[in-house]
Image (cartoon, rainbow, N blue to C red; front, side, top):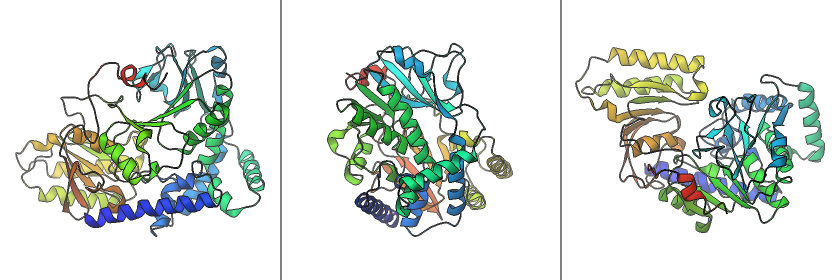
Length: 450
């Protein structure tokens, strides 16, 4: 475990050094996708992290080509129901995500991250559609960014855009490397939509469902240029994950980052460069404390299944040596964005066959207090721990995916096999604060949104 924590600290420092160097070269590190160091999902930033630690993967070239080509899909990205902003006098604009599941038949919206909806009269919603769904009827407190046609694309648009990018960056190879990605193009387009909205409102506050994504940082930058006095807030809705290089402080135009744990605030301050006064703590708005262990008794399949066979081998190795343990009640949960993926369904079937083979062993019923995670230990892992669940973790890359006691001392971490780890929580509500208070948004956010 000391080796993992040492590696993770060196990685964080290396990422910080990389960012400083890019700033000296006049790269906008808040906007560059290469500087958004997500480890838990495929992205330009993830492959840059792998380059930094000298573990570059050949498939990054295929990813890069696919990423650039996907810019062609955004040619018809548009702001729908823009006219709704013309008549509103809302004091706050919330930037969040939406899908068809968030709307009722009358076009009213409910946000699962903030746990509020369009019944809040002080808020206007600037929504990013995840499935390009646009309700036929819609509440007048909403505008949505979505494609006009779900599966449309234009290679003419792509070629024209890349030509303009190269000339606008004066043929600078370094700048082109930072800004040729779909995430950059998307950030520019979404921010232009937002600027049109902001200039037509008298909003005093902007609140984002914040993850440090380039388009979010660009919205913040442009919002402050339009109105220096506007208050900008980010809400980190999820529980902590092992190595949060995507949250390294980059001098974002964010007045306050709102998180849901003392551990999270300590980590951001001590390791990621955030100032104490810029971080506030509130209980999770998204989650409630449930007496029933809603995240226990599951095998969580990750978004990324690159190590399909290795995961199967690790799982069978673990389950075979737990001779007095009953795994009958464990069920498989595929990442929601891949629930129809043939690869993920094959993985689920393979796990199911292994469980079936060992179903008659043991009489211990503690499996209901146990969950298994493959890949990166995401925030869901911490949520399960807060419910009193023991976690067994099969990481893709232990150095990047495993929780370390150095950063998260409230977690008891034990290596129980080759690339297999066990987690338990030492004290509740310290790593992720969850309670059942009513009207948490009004209680905790009204003091920010004046």
